[in-house]
Amino acid sequence: MPSQAEVKRSLAIAGHRTSVSLEAPFWAELKEIAQGEHRSVASLVAEIDAGRAPGRASLSSAIRCFVLMRLKAKLGDLNAR
Image (cartoon, rainbow, N blue to C red; front, side):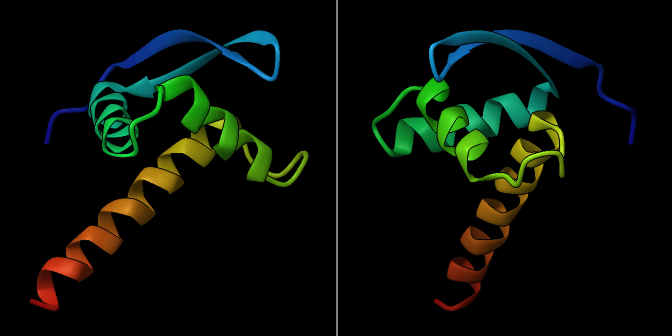
């Protein structure tokens, strides 16, 4: 599988601007999750940011883990049918 280049985006979180770098498939899935919850990507990222332990993981890493957990849960739901 070819490697994906990271895409950097700027978001406003907790009243300040920050840049986040993620591979395009993670941005696409994050956008889909946000749309499914009728909210903005920035508000979803702010929630992810608020939930991570200080100094533990980068915001980009926390977002990737969040997306992975959501996809695994979705897959589990599909397998349960």
